[in-house]
Picture 1 (spheres, rainbow, N blue to C red):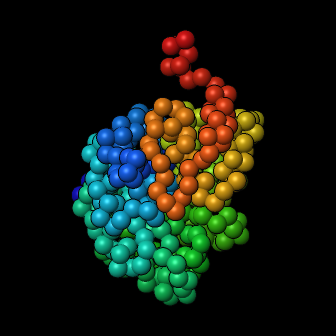
Picture 2 (spheres, rainbow, N blue to C red):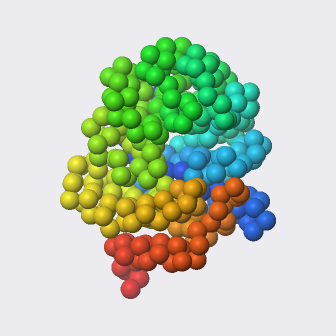
Length: 313
């Protein structure tokens, strides 16, 4: 059980960079617990405000409902309270509640509620879904606004009134008008998280709309770059931001955009590039080709050396 209140969790994650660790798999696609423990311990050694276990980059969609609490439990054990651990949950309402309860028992400090499986719904149905998940746990819940689960400001306001543990809103669609209306309506009631793929691209304009944090997938394999970029965003250092976009993020996006599902696959590939091979992605995703892996390795090699690397030379 988390020792943090939902509000404490929300405040903490709103003040720094967030990331979604990959879920390592063995060659037979089973969960690689030892590698996951090593990765989580390593990531905690960097400046991160929260880690989302079994999230989107962690291939939540390919995990079974029983695997999610297992992954979360290992994450909680390995982080040892150094950072909040939030868990993914989703699918239909009944499954989302089941996963949420299991994640809370595993020690998660909060939940990210991903869109329901497949179907589109009206606002009343989406609201009932969110409220049911919030009511099933005491830990804080962040709703992920994307795809078939786009909550409008009035709906969010009603949910915020009814659900004290609804503490966050993650934007995954990039509708600036909607984001502005949500922030204007809800203000400081929620913590706002940037959640578009390769969120660094949108970090600066979103900061001006009240989105103080975002989820960095590249933090998985280049944490020094990710934290430095986030610091540049917070101080509005346009020169450093544009250099990071030009030299790393945009070339990475060019590789990512070649095939569907590469938003996750390229992060697993990055782990392999830096010597923390976390195995393949599970179907229906596909891994990068050897040529694409080499291109990614070349991008990483061009990044400035860290202090530890400089000392080793």
